[in-house]
Length: 343
Image 1 (cartoon, rainbow, N blue to C red):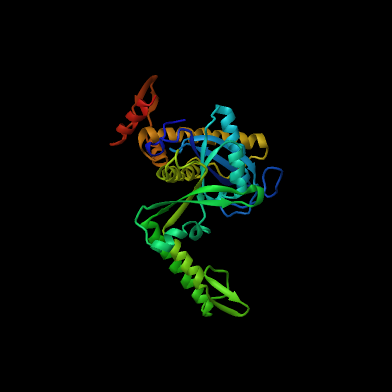
Image 2: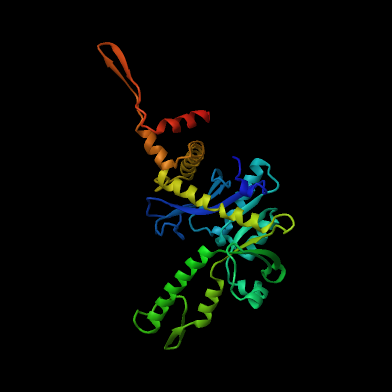
């Protein structure tokens, strides 16, 4: 693995996980290429791709799954394969709220992994009841609160640590969205827009009205972001949990690089081995691209464009070979020096 950022230096074996889809130029499904929930909103046969990266975005493990496989069932096979391949025993995985379910978190924990996962705010008023009772919905920017919540039922029920943080920037964004959704619900309630499913709309028979309780609760939670972890307070402070989760955007950035800069899609292969080889080439290119970005400090797309323009030439004239050196644009020499220094 490459060096981790200082913000997450307290978590030695920290990895980020997410899933995306890659579609095929094919009409028919098979055992691997299935029509499923597409991140690209397509109806073509596809595969699911699970990607594990370090906090700087460097790819560590990549697996493909059937196109209709549930995202939540992909994470454990990828983690187990990575652990077995590298002999890592203390692994902390960060994932978004899409991976959040009591059974899934239990399975991750039972497999021997620590986790930091984005939390939905459906239970936040109950977790933070003491704060709301004493201070209402008043928070200071960056304020962090700790709570616990029992997740799951019956034998699957376990108490989980929840970390919350309030952000003034997120508060402003949440309120804008709440106001927008409230206006949409009001337009439907007043008959100014056609009937459709919108948040904040309460329908009772033929009666349509704003759901004031839901709106009030949404405003109470505006600005809050929650994180679920199975790491104890004594070993990992809340600020480190939050910092680790904030690096999750690196997985999405790697997916964007893979799909656009490295042209991983669409896939025209049909056989499983050929598809696997295609992904292996993409994975290797992503690793090289991330390494070049780290060395040069230049985004990959710009780096590719700039380097393509640098060309030398050899011309044979009357039996004599003339060499024309590449013309390096101003400002690019420093980038080339950084790249040469990395090897």
